[in-house]
Length: 455
Ligand code: NAD
Image (cartoon, helix red, strand yellow):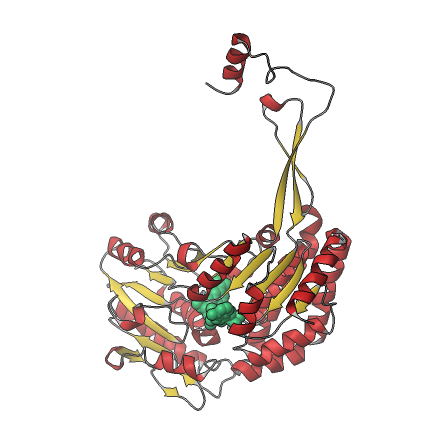
C-alpha cells in the first residue's frame, strides 16, 4: 500500500470513532505490552546487531521504560481522558465550564536511532493512549532494530490503526509531504527544522525532541566520589550516544584534580573494554570518524583508544578544555567527556548561557542556595540534582527540551496531553437570559459591565 493509501485508511478508521473508546485504547496498550514481552529475545538480538548492546542494558534503557509508560497509561487513562470541570466566572453565570480531551487524529512519529525502541514506541504509547492512529517511522541508522519494530507492529496491528514505515531521508520526505494531524519528531536540531517547515504547510501541531550540550555542574560541596560514579555511568551508557548524556563537565577548580581522578577510577572499575558487553559500539563509521576527530590528543587525561574495525572508542576524559575547543562547538553524542573548570559560580553560569538552551542539566551540590541559584538562572529542558539521566525514568516528569533542544514534551500524562486537543466548553442553560449584553445599550448596563469586568 502507498503511504497515502495507508493514511487514508487511518483517517477512515479514526473517523469510525473506534479509537475514542477508552476500553479499546487500554486493550491496544495491553496488547502492545504483551507482544513486546513475547518478542523480547528477538528485540534484544536486533539491538545487539546494531550496537552490541547487552540484554541488561536493552531492558533497563529501552524495554523497561516502555513498560513503565504502558503501565502508567493503562492505569491512569480513565482519569486523564475524563472531562474536567473548571470554575465559571460571574459574567457567564449560570453556565458550567469544562474541558474535554480529544485525540488529534492520524499521527506521524519519526524516531532517532540511539534508543531505537524507546524513542519510537514510547511516543506511540502516548499517541494510542490519547486515542489516535499512528504511522511510525523508526530511524534507518539502527537498521536491525528498525526492521524488528516493523515486524513486531505490522504483524500484530492492522495498518489502518498502527503502521510502521521503514526508510531514510527520501521516505521521510515523502511522508512529510502528506497532511498529518500531529507530527512527533525525535532527532537532531537540523532535521527538526526541516520537519517544522514541512508541518507548517498544513499547520500540523509538532513536538520536537532534539538534542544539545547538556552540562553537569560539579560544585565543591558534593560527595565527589558518588558524583563521579553516577556521572561515569550516565555518560558512558550507550557509549555516550544518549540525548540527555552529560555532554561536558563544569567543575569547581578547587576540586578538579581530585574529581577527575575519581572519574578515571570508576571508568577502570566499570570495565568499558570492547569485550565487556556492558559497553556498546559506536553506531556506524561516519559517527566513529566524527567522534575520533573531536579527540584533542594534547588534552587527553585518560582513554583515547580507538578501533575503527570494532567501532570502539574507549571512555575518554579531556582536561583543561575551553569553550573555544572544537569539542565544545556541537553536541558530542559519544564517549568523550570534556572538563572545564570554573573559579566561581557566576563564571560557570556565563559559560552555560553562551551555549544554546540544553536538553538536560545536572547539578551536583549539597548546598541549597547554590542549587536554587543554578536552577533559576538559566533554562534547560529538564534534569536532576545529584543524579544524571534518571529523570527520564519517572513517568510523572514531562520529558522534553526548550529552545534549540526542542519544543513540547511527553512521558506519562504529558504524553497524553501532547497527542490530545483540549476542547473548552461553556455550557449554558436556558432558564435565565440576562439582557446585559444585548441592545439597547444604556449607561446603567455600561456601569454594571464595568463592575463585572474589573475596571
Ligand atoms: P537525525 O535528525 O539525523 O534523524 C532523525 C530522524 O529523521 C530519522 O528517522 C531520519 O530518518 C530522519 N531524517 C534524517 N534526515 C532527514 C531529512 N533530511 N529529512 C527528513 N527526515 C530526515 O537524528 P539522529 O542522528 O537519529 O539522532 C541524533 C540526534 O537526536 C541527537 O541530536 C540527539 O540529541 C537527538 N535525540 C534527541 C532525543 C530527545 O528525546 N530529545 C532522543 C534521542 C536523540
